[in-house]
Length: 427
Image (cartoon, rainbow, N blue to C red; front, side, top):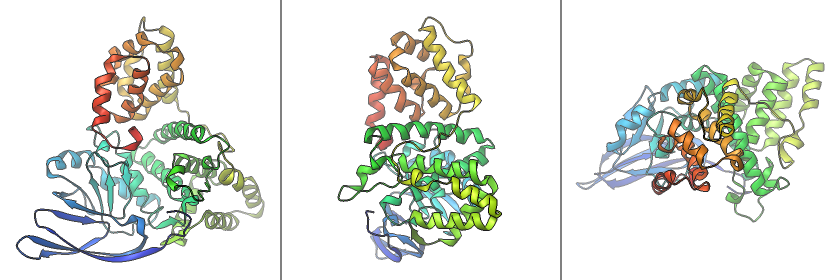
């Protein structure tokens, strides 16, 4: 996907494969029958237009298990029980996304867990999300990846960005929708605010990597003759999310933001768009739903050039802190102040934190790394046993911290972790 406008297509596919294997595709299966004693035929049809980069096929010793009236999981038979248990809430995720957005147009939805070498957390191929086994942890801490890929069914698959410079229309919208759905599932808006807080950190780190004045740190990267992947980062995900969050918090309100998203999706379904189409839709929506004075106020405060074209941090600083987030960060501060000689009185609270709150704790240690020494790491690990966590988000941050401080207890677990995983986020 470079600067050539995305073309949307439908397709029919016929796959002949050894009958010891099964075939799954980003389309509806219409037939399966023997070809001869050795081979079977699978036929697929997709009648909804999609960009060609979303066509996907998986062939292998695979098993499907239904988890609801229109959802299921696929993986190797030896792993099907653990995958089905981890993603047992898949129907609720799809139903909640549909309730927040519009009707799910694709019919069925499946997630296939690929081998460890798969480099992405998930890839939103219609009807058939490809996902990394890194999301199958045993404690359901990483299943929000599935919520993100489900949300792509609306923004990315149905309404698609026309080119790489408009990539945030896929990812920023989907992150916003994912966090809305996650908050509804958990009945807790703070869960999504903590995710946004961490997303802001990774966005800023990526911006520093490019340079805050690089157009790759804007929402409208100009790729030119470079590789599009050179501009790939968390910027379109998180800066795009923050633009939409700003719209909701400062301009429209939650109910009207939901109405805006629904009407945008319905008006642009099965098309490839640029952000100009969204700007036009936003302005029309505001003029139709607010009186003249309100509309003028909203439109005058929406600085598209600053948000989309300007490099660097968003033009408005947004607050994603929560009481639990502050508690987690403060716990790390207290460990540092105690210098490894003793433990904070409330250190056991860490055990009850969900994944992202634990990550906040480790991120705070990384922020103050100049003040962290071996005695502090040993005290933390004796109390909290982070080195042996099953949570990859914690491992990704804790292992490098330990390595930098020559904390030898992390060496073997870190080696084992990177030797068995291909997800680029963790490498």
